[in-house]
Image 1 (tube, each protein chain N blue to C red):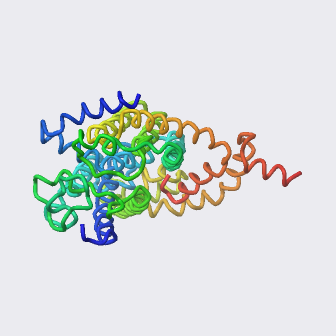
Image 2: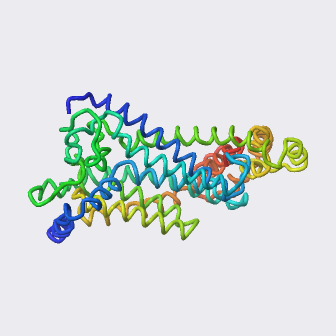
Length: 195
Length: 209
């Protein structure tokens, strides 16, 4: 499995240097700042997007679940990292790869940024299918950029996506343990005229 | 790189805050324009507010990624090389601009927790700016303060719903008053209707026994 994984990274990364503009675009998309900002802005936008009181409460509760899922996804990835210390592709195949990104020092599996992106996208998808698909697209492009840059294997990306989606599902399920605190919190924010 | 990571981190934090603030303000304007929440509009018209939002988001991202061209940082000479440790301090060239921001958090980039902190602060600031600007806008648009007063005496809607026809500062006392009068009932009915797995319900039912 690892060899197929490695072959895909090496093949894809082999295109680095062919079109400089594309490489530059990948560097920007793969950055730690652009796509995480897009996910955060997506959630912020949905918080204020409801057009009726009922829709607003639904959106805002879902966004709170999404934010919680992001945090929990980070913890889940950290636990995986402790259990499976998979080296990054550039550590094992450094002589065959042209890195487009700084060499991260944490383990490769699962891809943390992809997990975060897919958790946010799943939250968005549950309340707005069209917007959710755009967010899934953004998360997938983010994953592809890191793959092309040579810092993740394809299975890290797939693993990250599964962790993100599963974490959102679990967070929604776990909400029942904390009710009515969460609904009360949204009511408090409404009392401050922000929900 | 011979620069202290904390110096780099402070630089990144200030740049990231500007990015997050402008883009949050832009996103907020697009969302409230679509939802008709006039109390947070920065211009008197929905279309103009939406356009302003789009311009703010694009400006924020463009400024953030082009800033290394004129602001000195860990992106001179070698920023296109992957390892952020080997970079020099200075401004970046056009050739290096795409990779300039790719600095590892151990060398001064912002990790996820710091980004979350600065983004939250920026989003709250963007909301406050929208609330203040919206108060001015509400006085400019056809919805005069007098009309707003009439509406507020008839309408008890609060939160974002109240901001559809009231400024933030007119809406806040109504929202908070409603919150104080409703929260006990919200809590009681929430506890009553919550799932059997609810920790709060378990605590309250055991204490009542």
